[in-house]
Amino acid sequence: MTFFAEIAQTSVIEFIAVAAGLIGVWYSKKLNILVFQIGIVNEVLLAYIFFDKQLYSNMVINLCYLAMSIFGWYHWKHPKKDEKTLPVKFLNTKGAVVATASCLAAFGIMTIISKHFSGNEMSVWDSFSAACGLLGMMLTALKKVENWIFYLIADIILIPICITNELYFSGLQYLIYCIICFMAFFSWRKEALKNA
Image: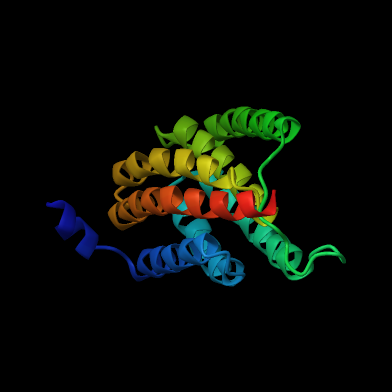
């Protein structure tokens, strides 16, 4: 079956999840708070899809994204008293070290857990993409430019994971996310330089 024939076989749930994901990431690129509301739809549906494919790290991560979407929604809506809106900023050196160490620690923990519960051959890659995505989501909630770097790594890894698990439309979604990540990184970078 061809790639496009496989995409035509996409379930309604996967189609809605992908549509919500693409819209949500576009809103994030534009620094629009709707990223979180639209993201909630995407996260719930992807948690179900990844559960069904035994990609438990990404299932759990989407449930964590759900919690972080609520946090981010609140955090963006209620900036510090002296700020009109939460400004986009870069991580400082300490923040970058902590972020990278947190990502590696999450990867290690998720790998150990997923090896015991998942029968999916991609479980280690699933764990790494989930750890990168988790950090990307946290950095998005904090409006840190570097979120796009972690998202890009996660998205690149998720493309073959989705294709291997016959989630072709989702694989296409992550390819499009990679393009948006590049555009968004430079857009957020420009905004952070104004705030420096």
